Each structure stands twice: as C-alpha cells, then as structure tokens.
Length: 330
Image (cartoon, rainbow, N blue to C red):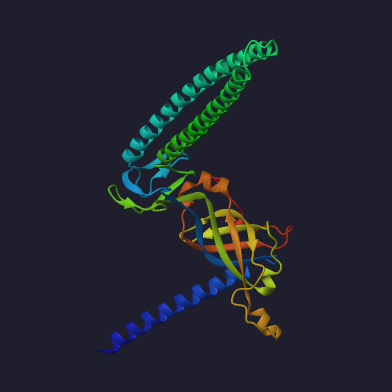
C-alpha cells in the first residue's frame, strides 16, 4: 500500500472520529440545555391491549377483521358456530310450552276441586240439619264430613300441582334465557374503539372457553414507562405535566402527564445502609400520552416506539421552545 493510500485512510478515520465527537458533544449540550425544574428519561410507548376471547367453547365460524383493521365499539369481529345451541334452544322453548300447558291443566283442576269442596260443604250442612231431626243416621253424617275433608285434600293437591307447574315454567324460561345468552355471546364484539393488533385463530378451529381469537389495541390509551433515580423521582408529582418526543418524529411534541409513581424502588436491596446505595435506586413512573392529541394524530398511536419523556417538576417553570406543543400548521 503506497503512502498516498495510507494518508487517505488516515483522514477518513479522523473525519469519522470528529463526527462522532461532535455528535456526542451536541447530545451533551442538548441535555445541558434542559432548564432546571425538568427531568427526562427514555422509554418505549405501551398501550392497553384487549383480548377478544370466547366465553364458551365451540368451533370458530367467522373472523371478520384482519390485523391492522380499525374497529368500532360493539362492532362484530367474529362468530362461533351455534347450530347445537339453536337445537338446545328449540328444545328448551318446547319444554316451556309444555309446562305452560301443565299450568293451565292445574288451574282447571283447582277450579273443579273448589266446586267439589263447595258441594261437599253444602251436603254436610244439610246432613247436619237432617241428623238433628233424626232423619239420617250418624254414619251418613260422618260420610259427608269425610267427603268435605277429602275435597279439601284434593284441592290442596291441585294447588301444589299448580305451584310445581309454575316453578317448572320459571326453570324452563331461565334455561331458554341461558341458551339465548350463550348464542349472543357466540358473537364476539369489540368493547372499544381500537385497532386489531393480532389475529390469533382462524375459521374452523375448535376453541375452548376463554380461547383467544383477537387482540385489539386501544389507540387512545398510550403510555410510556420510565425509570428515574431517587433524587429525581422524589420530586415528581402524580398529575405533573410531561412531554414526549418519539424517535423518528422528534418534531411532534406530544403532551402527556404523570399517572403513576411507584411507591417502592425497583430492585431494592434488602438492606440499604449508605446514602450512595440509596441514590442508585430507580423508581418506575408511568407517563400517559394525551388522548385528545392522539385522537387528532392517529398515526402516532403506536406501541413499542422508543422515545424521550420530559417531566416538569416545578409547576411554574416554562417549557423550553423545543418542548412546546405545536398546533397543526405551526
């Protein structure tokens, strides 16, 4: 290799080193430019994920959405086959009709038994008068008294039969409603406005109760988990304003606020004796991105994007210009 080539390589390596040093210095300057009353930390966006699961086992008949699809609240996402449930429903409805017939029969029997009891009582009253006049024997009077008691017993039996029929009707109706509920639950709907993150099952698969079909991402519930040392975390208040800058789109300053500060440090040793050890402890925080801003900027509603979060410790501190939330068009 000649001297000219060596010199060229030297200057290329030197230039690369200079660029790295400049970038490093600029990054340090950027950190130093953060005024007092603010702290920062890096993290990744996370979001609430809702699993769309089966309540009862069955064969998956349809999946109506794909990964990435936007879904509305109560939108039908999938269906479980319900032919067996439909047959059970018809049988339960037939049983309900049969118990209704039994009730009507029991009511008719009660009417008849009441008439028989009334007639028996009238016969007994006449027999009492005839017995006092020595017109009939004691035996006849006792037979009429027995007839009244028998009429009472048969009426009580008919009333019990009616109660049983009414209970059977309630049981049949409850069974019918249960099967209808199972059929309704076989239609899987989205509980939220969101986006399909994962499609985990396909039509034809037999799923158990609680089987996962889809996972839906809530695009308005995006947050970032951060870790701060003790001396910084101690000054952070729940509700404090924050700003988030995501990698790749640092020009978008996303408003946020602190929703959680861990009551205990992460990886806390059992015994912390010295001040230097205490200062090494890290506390977990949660910064929630503003839902209204995300709704207006749907493209930002993503999970797993790295970025920086800046938290205001002093409520009277002014946000630096580079962390001011800009309206569209500014």
